[in-house]
Image (tube, rainbow, N blue to C red; front, side, top):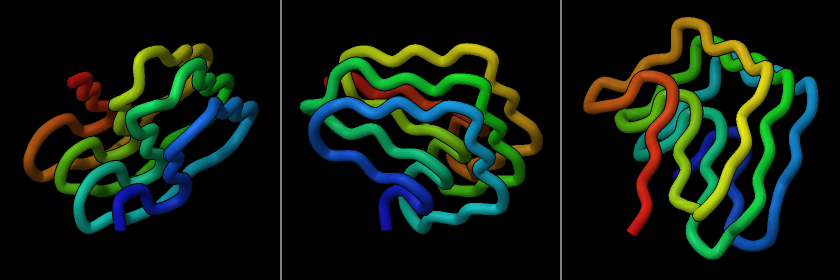
Length: 90
């Protein structure tokens, strides 16, 4: 499993006022995983709390652009790297 709650592959995504709580992934992105070939994602006024993954406890971004505005990150955990957000552009 890559992104526990939301795993995008194409297009763009806008999330407004969402709560991502206690999500778990075995590889990357406990709550939200924005993959390559995606542009223009927005996370607006969302709450990320107690999410876990080995890399990117709450959010993993490997797309070109993302807007994160007004979001709150509380106690997200990654045992390898990046507790709340990891950005991976290749």
